[in-house]
Length: 187
Length: 106
Image 1: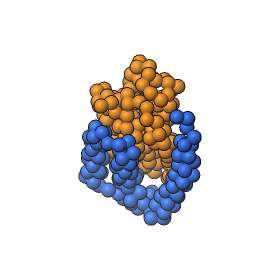
Image 2: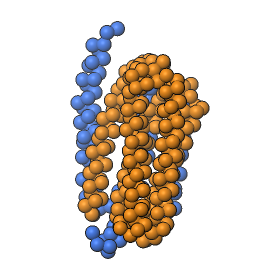
Image 3: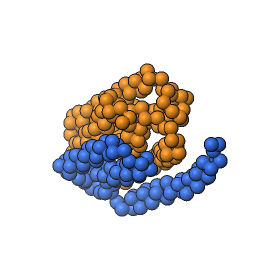
Image 4: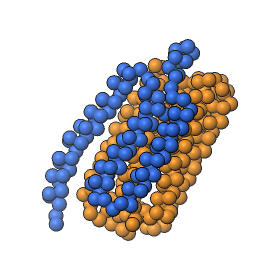
């Protein structure tokens, strides 16, 4: 195994622990506060967040195809699949920001909200904000590696390491979506 | 790493297998959304959702992140250490956190 790949795995382990701490403390706050807000109706919040989940999963699949193409040394195909992955990331971020602004319009801030315990804002914007930052960094990272690989400066291993990061971002959302959104649906 | 060594490591699941995994992940997401409207107790709901998320994470790590096809020493290096750290968080955090609840003014 190359040093880049090992380095990325070590980063993923450390970042997993960061998100684990946040999600464990969120679980405690969610279960011990009876007045935890349920601000997410089926339309638009749950439809949007489910769409975001499917988009992120689809972008992981395009990243898998990019890695496979890179291993066959098909440079233009690799770049194409990586651009498709970036589009998925950008669409995810756009939908997420729309969801954030919708909550701002309803009066939710990082320190308070009109529905219940003020902790909700800090937890929701903190965890989803950290995840969105990872997605945006991932899109930039994809752009850099796609450009370099297209020009022959980066190897297939670089694309594979980039893929590990992107799948990790997807993996984290698989916990954030059910724990943050689905635990707070409005009936 | 030379190209030959990389080619040896490059094996993994086929496109068809990855698509099947993707469909499985979307199906589990659909199940999660369905369960969210079943009005279960929050503790039960959280436990079920986390269990489903762990299954999704295992699928992503095994197939998309190629962990299933890597050398087993990498798995031994990463997974037990991660599980150990997360268990330590539970062991040290929850007893004290729940003790604090009894001090909450009513």
